View 1 (cartoon, rainbow, N blue to C red):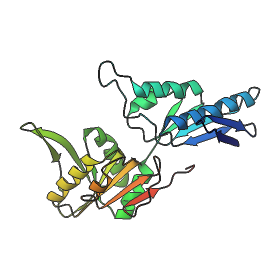
View 2 (spheres, rainbow, N blue to C red):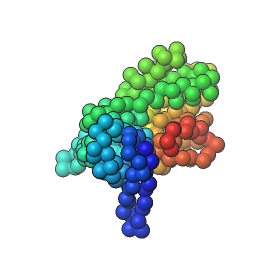
View 3 (spheres, rainbow, N blue to C red):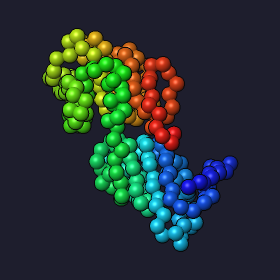
View 4 (cartoon, rainbow, N blue to C red):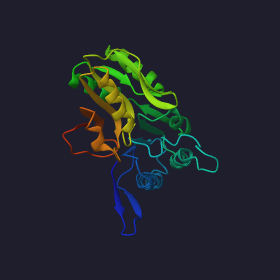
Length: 254
């Protein structure tokens, strides 16, 4: 399916469908403009395929905007992910694929949704490093990281942030002395938690600490990570990064 996108000077986006048939739209999905662009394409496609009932429309979102706002955090605040998912549902795609969503709430709120696994990208990082110990950064990431460790036949060390006498401390539940470690998580906005975790791992004898995140946002604190992390692996789901400190796995369609 071919289509054209045009953006006017005032920011308006319009779409034109060049042919009928199935359509598969792939977007980063990390901005509201991305979603509006997909909506414009889908509206034009619906009009073009009004009599073509067997055509299928698919949407792939590589980095869903608002995925961490998966609940109403405080009284009186908006439930942002709910608003975003309602907008996606209103487009009425036959299939909506999401790469490594932050929580299952996204899949629960989006109709006809499915998860795209990140395991293959973790495996690429794991093989490039050379069989490091996998580290889950918190209790929420443990189950997923444990499943990856089983698939790769890799050692796994859980970690968690705990409070000791009221002060936050990182608890590492395993032996990393003399070993290389790969922290695995879904996204990094600033990465301060990863910095502290890497420092704690090295204090316990880890020779090198690497970081894998599917969604490498790094909106702040990137230079701080270089002080404790030896190298970063991520996809280009959120943005393209030109830095020798980062190895990006390119996604089909971006």
